[in-house]
Amino acid sequence: MMERQPLNGFDGVEGLDDEFSLVYPSAISLKERTQQQRYQKLFWGSLAGNVVALVLAVVALVFALLGSPIEQQTGLDSKNQPSSPREISRVAFGSCSAYDVRPQPIWENAIIPSAPDAWVWLGDFAYLDDTLVRCSATPSAPECNCTATFMSYPPNQCLAGNLDTARVRMARQVNSPGYRAFLEYMCPGHGDKFLHPAPPQGSSPSVCPRPVLGVYDDHDWGWNNGNRRLPHKTEFKNLYLDALGEPASSPRRNANNGIQTSYSFNQSPKGTPTSESKQIDLFITDGRFYRDTLPCQVRRNS
Image (cartoon, rainbow, N blue to C red; front, side, top):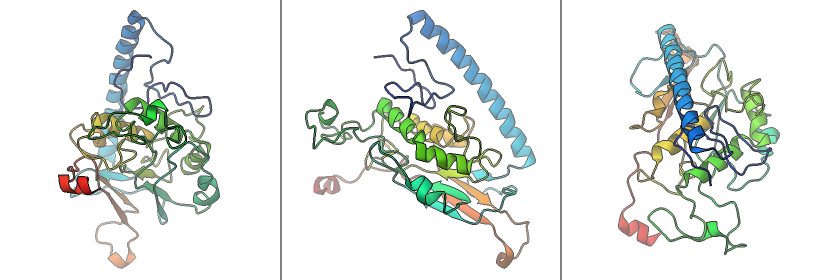
């Protein structure tokens, strides 16, 4: 088993076929490396990451000075900046992709034909904590057998909080043909996983004229009905944000905060009568990062 280093984003996902393979820009190779090669790669990867972070920080500063096309706030009381020049009128909300690996024709057969101007994930982008086998059919499978803890339990939740499995599951969802077709519709020129292996930046109008935004729920948090006790919760949070193409400099990646934020579309000039305004304000809350544990009695009864 290869050694994995903590990374923001998908690392080289082991065990995926070409249909779903995702190589994120910060990925480490899947091949075994000598210790010296690993240290060299980590050094250059860290240097490159710092350079990229610096460049993104400069770009973010420029946008902050000039006014971002789609305003994103983590403080909900701050003033909005100019909205996207493209009018947003049809906002689609969705959740709960597929708990297993299966075709998802809904993207091409229903969602794309509905012509959304923006898409908002409301949770369960991917089921990161579910097994890839049916435990009822293969009860002896290793992933269906584990010692119960406060988080994982047999047969279907043995993989809860497993970051390696989560990366595989998220990569498969992002690279499923149906979802890639959806990304091509929302973000023209960025749906081809070979030309653009990393997910496009869903909140950038220059990349996605039809924004792709969202927040996780429990399964894409990595733990069914999970709460703030999730181990490696910052890594799980960043994995989700990687799938949305959130920039490395985004305030949503702050290790001490959840991914709550707000966006404004079609911002009206100050003083515009409400009856004439087409402004849409979207407030996204995080129901997992800060979530308390359920009382013992409730857990016993469930």
